[in-house]
Length: 134
Image 1 (cartoon, rainbow, N blue to C red):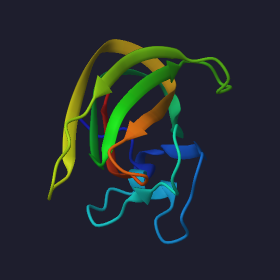
Image 2 (cartoon, helix red, strand yellow):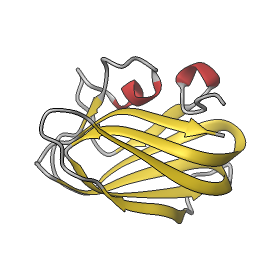
Image 3 (cartoon, one colour):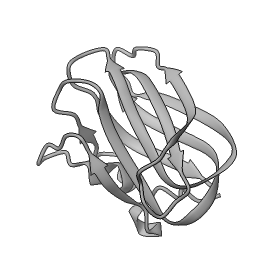
Image 4 (cartoon, helix red, strand yellow):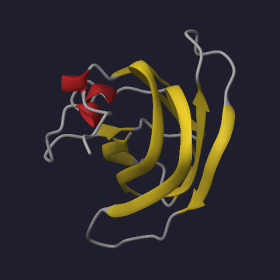
């Protein structure tokens, strides 16, 4: 299966509640392990990824640092205005490495995925990679 959340396959970050010029939100879809998105503090933080077409999502993989509580919502419409919760997870804190979490879904159809970081283990969090198997 391919990672449908890569910009090479048409995925785009269409909204982010914060952006650092050295670590912009687009880094989560570039497929490069050395790049990442860095929040600028405060919670909640939000990222919305849009896919070029509706797809059935079976697995979401998140590589992050200092994320404590994450909610994932989906939307299957052209406009990203109404979302429904598909997963919510509390991440374990890591000291020296990334948090790697896989979240299995039921094949829900989505055009947009919204990632709401509700809390973190520090004021700043980072997301290094979002993987979506469809």
